[in-house]
Length: 249
Length: 377
Image (cartoon, rainbow over all chains, first blue to last red; front, side, top):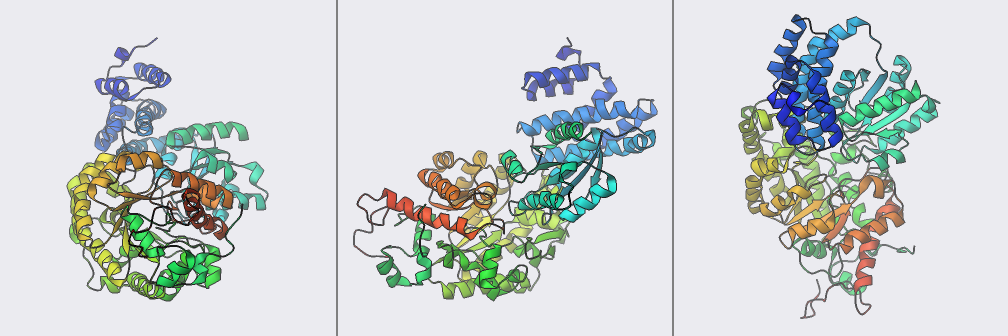
């Protein structure tokens, strides 16, 4: 079984030691990073640190060195974002730090995405994402989208202030089966229920699965509005999407 | 559950008549203000410190969103339902969060009948470009809000009128955009300090104007929420500034910060706010333990699950639990969804009244003894 000392990068070792508490997460991350190359660990470390310029440069270098796009995405970018997500969940970092790391991830993904698109690899599924009608907040939604794409999903981003009809239209247009709805305001959360109802009205409810999330949203509220799952954060959103993708496949 | 046949508010009594005929020795206004300062009350106030506007209320008053945001008479009529229809001790006329931002040239989408206004585009990238327009307090959002406060003060001399100010941290979200603003708290903290510095006078002008128009207190919101930033961010960027605000504001101050704020309530008390309007994620017992007598606590009634999705009885029970914790007043935790039923909202004032009934030792409608000299409010 790999040990912490098997990870070459000191920054990564310290991050795991200092911020990870759950045994299964420690084990998983030690296993992950101990098998990745020093360059991937450097990319992950820079991403955790929010160093956009270094992530950009190292990603480019890795591609030039012949490292595969999937390897860079999984072992560098997503692996680093995984640590950030855990730190966020545990309250070690807050949204500003996550945004800065997400910005760094975006810089890396800008090199990766065209290669993935050209590779013809089938996505796990298509997810329609939008902030519900009346709500213009999109930080959480955008983080989810970034990780969903990194996790192998094709994501259609409907943006903010999305009326139910737009969700329906997008599902029809893209043949999607998973919908993610976000809301930051208690005043706009009821529009999640309205969206689910609108799908019932057009006979599409059974064909899709709804994920909900947002600062004031709770699992109970998700059930109340008829959603199929609730994601507390972006990492949970990806896990939920994977579960729902199996259900609708 | 037995409910009030008619709200005391419907009796439309004023001053001495109110107290004599209702058996309550405080008017709603005095009850609210006394509770805000942590003083004695005849019964615990049930209030709005945000918006309790609903589609039903719009129908009753024929004052509809979005027009009511920019029309003083409609705003006043609609806001008055908090007292007239719900029997609450306060009225809050500014329903939205755009008051200062709109007057500072943020692009505002004023919403629809069933959707709230919001900032649709951000206009500021450099604090040195920020200017307070010469006609700032004459801009449409202010004309409506200040006009509504004046009307309400005249119509309801015995009801608490609450003004609303978005502080410089929250105005920054509107003008700069929340993502850039939050990232700069780490990447360029001096820039954020400069934003706060230049925007603060605009927020103070708003507070002073609302107090001058007749508001009894100012609800000041700066959303340094746990969902967004650390408690140290509040301490490092806002604490000292808020200490100045609470001295300079010139009236009773109520601070609002959304979400689970347990880890920073101590800072809010240190800032000198008279009261904290807090959300349901915070355990009211813990909040009370942290604040002690330094700051009163109001709010704590959950919006989405209790008020919006729950029944009258659910809300009544939830209010009783919060009252038991010893808060100084109950209120929805924030602006209620427009589809919330008024019947459910009436549980706020009913529970506050019944809580006071339950706890009086001799069957009289008082929680604490009236003044020893026998004076009434």
